[in-house]
Image (cartoon, rainbow, N blue to C red; front, side, top):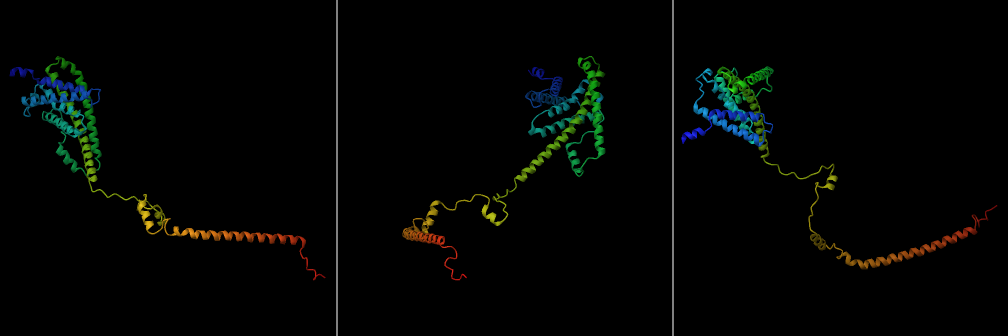
Length: 339
């Protein structure tokens, strides 16, 4: 029964080839990276490669005590497992876990580069670890800008890696059909897988540079969020009363405090207050008014009648004076002084 179960379990070559195929399909997929189809392939590929890595650890296929020449040609491809794991981890889409994915992918690429460096697959410099890079960042935090010499050397290294990568891809495409069909001899197979290892060394170095930059951006974003949260959690200021800007005291008295005034008493309170002081229409002055109004009205009528009589007498005198002037010219009756 145990023998049947072992036969049903996938073998290392099947795990490796299926994981590699899924990685190739994800890289050339036309669907969005966050689509369910692509993400399903990513998760399945990671699961298969994880099983392959566990199987390699159990078989103890590679040892740092041996040289590259001591590894069988058909086993060289299994050194690529950590690189494939890092590439698929980078394809995961989850903004809340992006920093974890980047750190995990970096560990896979560092693991791959460390193995290749131990076996002297190619001449390259290992990237700094997370602790060393953090210390280096602290030491160089006072530098505002990188030196021009360092920028030029980095640019030159990228150009050289790009040319080397293109050359390796050209040589691999020429040898792929012969190796996969089984027509190539052991020497050609070994060269083919060594070229694959060198190509993924360049890819891993580029990915680590990109990962370090993205991790720096994410950490700065998180620190800015924490700073904004701490500022918002400070003691809130008391609400400011509404106000208006006035040019002078008179304008301030007219416009008040800048908001509608509130009632200080109800209508009933106002009525009671005026009733108490006898200021209502049916109190005090209003009750004594009819007699006084009657006398005042009578006096006003008499005055008007008198004025009318005076007007008639004045008019009569004026008419008589006009008639007299018509019959008596100017100077009449003053003839005694005439010579």
